[in-house]
Length: 186
Image (tube, rainbow, N blue to C red; front, side, top):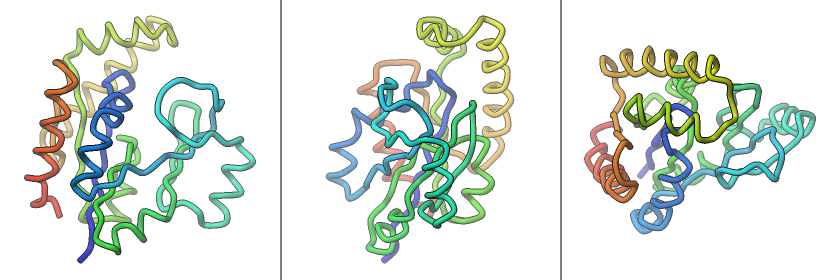
């Protein structure tokens, strides 16, 4: 029996890190692991539980074949360990925090992946991005425009849409339901 790759993606500010943290135990109870990402950023950065590495360390890992998936976005590099292949071969589902821009490459490597797009109402997303204070207003508006383009394309494709505009607990329950129903993705 082979496990599935569940590819969660969504714009910055949609709440992916919060959702993954809240869903960690229920997913584990269902035999689904959450893959820890390797990211070229400071270890002190707030957010997901990721392994922070330097650019040189990332390149060494990539060159040695340590990653099943790797991409670059927003000035950072991201990698997912090859151990996910072992987990899926053992029958476990694996959830990764992926990139919308990398979805075609991920689908090429894992044709049966179950893509889940975490969305949030535009005013809520704008408010979250403004509250973080990491970007200028122009950068936020450009990010919102890119998000809208991807969302429109996703509505026509093979992507499950998960709205996170409401309470996190409700979103987590819908994620668990999507994953259970999403067995049709595989």
